[in-house]
Amino acid sequence: MGKQSSAFKLEGNIGGLSFYKTRDGHMAREKGGVSKDRIMNDPKYARTRENLKEFSENARTVKMVKDTIRPAILRIADSRLHNRLIREMMKVLRTDPVNGRGKRLVGEGDWNLLKGFEINSSAVLSGSIKTEITVTNSPTEWGFSINSFLPVDFLSIPLGATHFRLMAAGASFDFQAGTKSFLLNAGANLPLEELTGAISVTIPKAGLPEPNKLFIMGIEFLQVVNGQDYAFNSEEHNAAAIVTVEKA
Image (cartoon, rainbow, N blue to C red; front, side, top):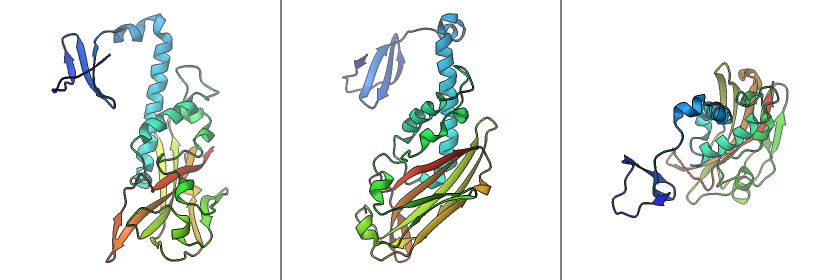
């Protein structure tokens, strides 16, 4: 593997070389390797085919989860969320106690491994909200509550923000059937300079019928000018996490 040093950066295939771009710059390497036909048919590559099947299953699952929860995390997710979620979901898939190699499924794995997963690695939820949070998990609903507090003393606030809002979201999945459900409870905009009342936000489980469920809590900051809301797309302050999970 070599790094391109020319002023003209290339991408694609030319002759026997493949040019491509990475986070480390423009790179070049010789084309070659094992043919796709051999990988898909040669018995020597059985393990490779198993890995490819599980990677595809994992990627499909991650896309389904991300697409479902996107309304809740649109201004919170960091640029590495996809890769981080791929890695965490693969850990779940590998704990599948039912199916053999090449056939393992995320939906059968240890769903609890996702508990505590941060949507934004640059702003963890416990760092953005420094007051005590009580999470509730009953047979009928998920939720969280916070006693009255002064936001400027207990929140990590971006410069220029005047308000914040807390949200709760629930999602459920049947990965094999391809069905999903999503509920979002976006709280009211609260001023940062005023004492809050007691805060309680809940999500009813009845609206989440699929077997693999997760509950997300998050915080977003915004600026309110003449009654108009201006959201902050702040990777350093907006935060959310998968607070708890459930598998039927």
